Image (cartoon, rainbow, N blue to C red; front, top):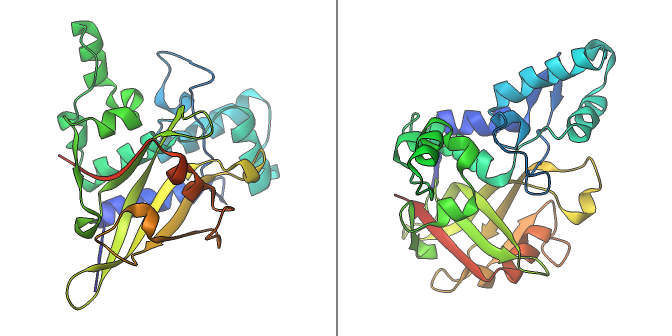
Length: 252
């Protein structure tokens, strides 16, 4: 038995994983605005754009740079996007998928951290541009749940990861398989990330799974697989192992 995200949510994932640009299929790259710190820009310029907005922006970018998309390969288009900071970050990706899952209602219900009335208004008007892992993991927006209760639409929040514990990341549970006792045996997840081994252009939407060995134990006691790696080469698992806080959370 298995349970999955709704079809609109699955379609959103598919769209990000297979952007259609001038007849070519391109995986959406990863981009995080943390280093650039661009403020007030459109979502497509800060790692928060919808897939259709990203496709449109690439067309505009090509025209500005006098490039003929018809003459570019899928690899060329990926390089064009990465070189011009066009992609999606982990929280932007999860936001748009879950917003599709909830038929647009996530935008209305998610609570942002701003206290200034003006910033609150901006946040409501530009919700996607103002979400991050900390927002999703806030008690106002989600609650911690046991691994045995994990279901499609839940998130795996990783707070304070990396060598300096200064990086946050999140995965979206897309599918859960169950045994005859209705206990989870496998979790499939999807996310947007750049592994250190991805080099400059090899990153973007990624798929992985967690085989449940003992649902009564923690996430790190299970078997993680991504891109064929189950050991230290699995950088998503490395992120999880270095996290100061790692938990499955359910959006309220």
